[in-house]
Image 1 (cartoon, rainbow, N blue to C red):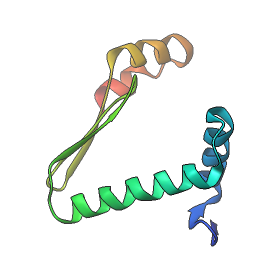
Image 2 (spheres, one colour):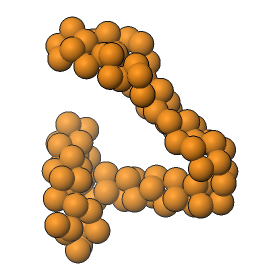
Image 3 (spheres, rainbow, N blue to C red):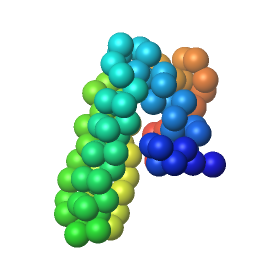
Image 4 (tube, rainbow, N blue to C red):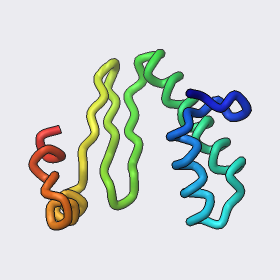
Length: 93
């Protein structure tokens, strides 16, 4: 299901709500940033651009032509492993 006012799914709406709350920013600002980022990503992927999105303390989304791979930072993987035992799956991605 999508919210037609933002164009986001209910799950995405909830994520934006949480981010807005944690960052003390208006939800509209968060939605605008997410949409702008997606537009840039769509353009870059559709035109075969090579680019990376760096997510501080998380990892790097590496886009080369039509290939997209998420590389997670080792510190994050270790932290996740301590709490949820998901490190092997993340490292294999």
